[in-house]
Image (tube, rainbow, N blue to C red):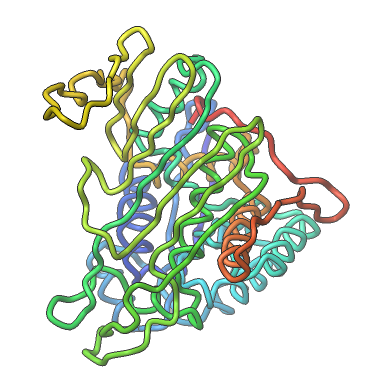
Length: 398
């Protein structure tokens, strides 16, 4: 069966994530392979339309990758029925107005997170999409990482017994931009532009926790700005008004406690840039982006505290690697393919704007906790009269 191509408006492709992960490694890779594979064995091709503010950057990208269509006029793109999907990879402060326009134009929505700077705006977008009847999805990329997929497999198998706690360490040193160029855009460190590690990472932590272990019911957090000034892309020093580190305790349904540290001002002393240790009554595991190591209770050593003797036991050797047992593709591409199947044939898809709103809520609650010094409880979210507080979802079918 022949299918009309799915036209995708890609807004923000000149940015690092928009270009590398969404355009190059996802949509163009799908196009090169002949399109998205559907359930009946046929494929539907994709066609990107590049949108951005810089005509020079767009023409350069289009020429390099043999893309016919680009524009700096988002309104014109949304008025053309050829483009049925709108993808947003802009900075956070530009996202809400563009998503409102795309929803009003009846386009299916696929967007980076956070979906908005405030919970009110995030819920507004979810309500607008529901009222318009448009399909919508939010990037949940870390659920598709090999290490987290292996961790999900352990959870679903019952390996841990009763899960007790999660400890997470994320971060690396982002250079200040003076004597070495920063690895992240300067807007990340300006709160007025939607920056801050809480706004960036707490939405990630929300979907990881709720899909692997259960919904977050309360949070206590301390957000700080360790480096008060940085140097931007033009070599100008500027005040860093956004938080660059956050230390948080999340209480999950069922009594599970998660402690997660997030920092752009930490030097790495672990195998990967992010690692999560999960401890349960029957076993434990440590998962990163790609690797996962596990220790069953039958293989757990029996340490004895003795500060008078140097430690000779190699505790790292007590952990066994969890095998791949699968072929893991690029996580951004996999989620794009799931969403496009949702658009093309109404295949199931769970990570919508309501899921994005839950992530924004956790970030907002984390900042409130840091401001007030209080533990913040999270009541179920409601929009349009419908309770949208999630239960733990299985990710084994990803």
